[in-house]
Length: 174
Image (cartoon, rainbow, N blue to C red):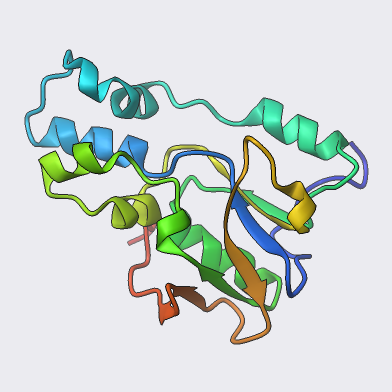
């Protein structure tokens, strides 16, 4: 709709950061297969489905575009939170602060089987086609997970648990 397109820029200091669902499942599914995992194992159904049949959050995006309270900035997380969150923060001229414990990471039990840290998987995993949204706290709902906030500070900087983000995520041109 005219005038309702989401952009990376436009967030305000104090805006909450939300993601639209699990992060890192596709990455976990790929790692499982790369390590020789059995594609028929039912315990791995969700990560493998996220990898093989990703589901972009189009219906959610449409509902949010029509809602009374809308995001001020947004983008898809196709390159992973570690790569895309700095882009949103930089475009809005703000610093992002997130909490690893609040990330909707893959199940710890599955991550442990592969020797993978769930929070790292959530930060680096792309191809889940979840949305990253910045806006007022009133956006919170069943489909959105609050993972942090945008604050005044170095534009584009991301702090995870009060420490600078040290991983960068996927780069198509590296």
